[in-house]
Length: 436
Image (tube, rainbow, N blue to C red):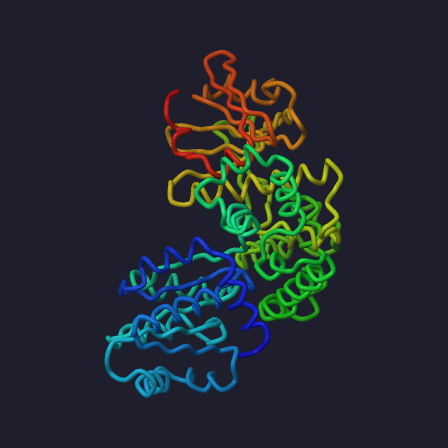
């Protein structure tokens, strides 16, 4: 096992991952389990953990990786892989782990063929930011796969780890009593994000070195594979520019002019950035296209450390304005995670007169506007931007996410709740749809 594989195993034994519980729960389902997500988010490590637990329970297992030369030969054909599995496991039931499967051409079709052979094996496969892999598993494996997205640590996973899992079931109590410590943890996460290897390093210099490796690996491996080599610099500049505009409306024409590349290329690069899990587009919420913006999205990064590194400020996000944008990005990540299986969608709202709401959670019959304020709030004064939205849509309630204020006011017939970031993180967002 190489150095990084050893390190990843060590990290995952220390840092507990929520997605690991989902995989354990589903491990005996017939579908192929696909772990997908950005490079270095912990996919290989999670697979190693699951393999170790199965082996300890007496199950037969096999781990193969397309990152290893000595394993790659077994992926030359389905028959070759089958022979290798039968040699190691035999003809009975077993669990087969296939790491970095995106390096196999036609990965989706290849695994579909293995699944269609009716072998008595459960396949668990992983793939890093591969546009081809995502497209092929969707097309080729309809009804034959279950996808698990593995991202860098969430704020909840990060805090639980950094407090030594002493307060796992009592974190709201911890935040209520340990306000200074909670603020320190928030600032650390806003600066460095949640890549496991970055979180594990204690010194700022080592965090920077690890993030440099992650960032350069993404550019030189994932993007170099997808784009021509001469275009990598332009793509890197685009990522940096988008990092500076996180939470702001993206003007594609302006980006094209700034970077000196064509408008179609800019749109294509933004699509690649999203498909490789680096960022997410947030589209506008509107009911009336005449008065509300209906096309241009905003963007948020999947990891704050990655964003800060692209800007050259990893570990040095200190100005209130910069912390405010990072805080807004964090609120988006929490909303996205909490609403993952709810069917609700996260948008933003902006009128042509430039009245703007940071987020609008659209649950179909109900909508909830969410304003984000990083600054300390002395009293529960509803942001002025909410007035127009309340008048137009009459939401049951609005949320104002901030650092420390908890309060509820009721202008007109709408409840405005002031929540801390910790309330949002550990509260039950489903209850927000209900009438107060």
